[in-house]
Image (cartoon, rainbow, N blue to C red):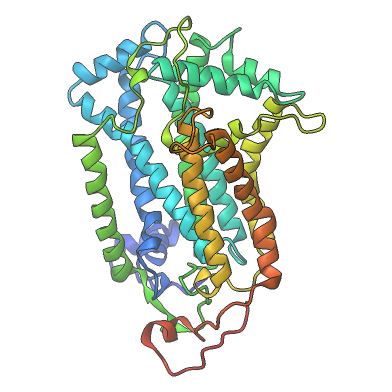
Length: 429
């Protein structure tokens, strides 16, 4: 929501700078006096948490790049040298590796909050789309970063994923050869992945700035989904939300520190502490935990669909699972944003969250294993959950848009907070 600037330069230098480059005014209007809905809860603090983690990832990544050697004969040893010989190298490396997990943990909670409160709906469609692009770049950076230690899981993960890209018609082979830079995963591949892994976080930073800009045009969504109607609906961002976000950031950083200092390897794979060997295939090849749901969707397609073979079908399903997020604002046509007032949608959303966790579980185990001693195999469970994942976006939300009867919403944000005696029905935006 655009608002008139209230910044007043006080010193002569501030006045001089404001007349030529109003960067202080921009910061003041964006992060101090910006009118923010007064009912935001702690689910809305993950944007600030993500900004802090992104900066930490870039800083630790730059330091690691000073000591890392992107060569197939020296990469693994250079990581071990960072851990043992570089002053506080162990800390920088554990901050970076666990920071990736913390980044994805925060972004998944951020996305689930957006799905529940309808933050992808008009007028915030572009804000949502930019967020999805950031998410895709995060996955690309994480995958390439996972390859750099050049352990067994790094090498074979790169081999599996790049080979899958070769299944894409027309351009697949060319993309795979470009990523390999050779006839197989090797030194040229490692150099390409290191270069891209270093570059992508800066692209993400640029998109985050664009994301914040896109947020400040229509303003924040809020738990009621009711748009701001007056000054009583908002509070200045500082000190109310700087304090609230600051507290949440400290709590999250304490959890982060718990992993770094007490369980730094619990989220990784033991095989990655074995140097890459092209002649020895690991018993199970799995990606990091934050990519497991999409890996599960990839493995769920074990059958040919018309002229599409199973391998290509799995690749299409994996990319479609992300691509469907781009069109979500036009699939869910309900005029009510927040699922607080959509009782049926709330239950289906809960099923979607369970499906995502279930897909992560399926991606981590052998698909031929039985589920908790039942006759069902993980492959069958995986296929059921994959079907629900796509049905949620392509069938359930569009149908609920027409057939669900929402509850009445508060007339304003102020009324929802202060318990005003104002009428309870709010017109659809």
